[in-house]
Image (cartoon, rainbow, N blue to C red; front, top):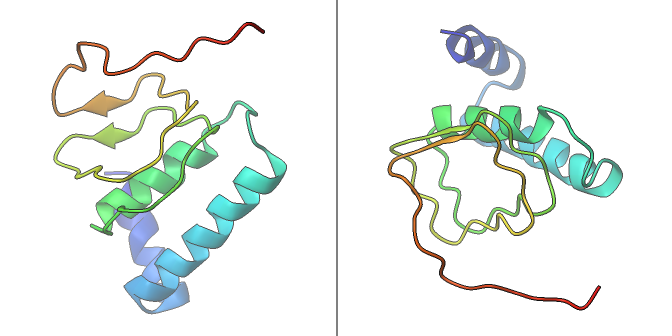
Length: 107
């Protein structure tokens, strides 16, 4: 409901899915360079738009970002880096249970 009109405007401005994806990758790089570990909705908004566009997310790096309210049901997240990412109020296809690994640091 919210993303459809936004994506229509993105197509009007950038013409192709590849151009939109390139622009979103630039925004993601800027977020990682200037706003790493800063609370906000930017990372989640970028991820939601990429998902709506059905972009292959393999290799994307969302580490150290806040990914708030991302709707990730029916999304393949193979090889997506969410290390140290705050996924508050994000929705996944199934409940994440069981711990795969734990890292412990003295600091």
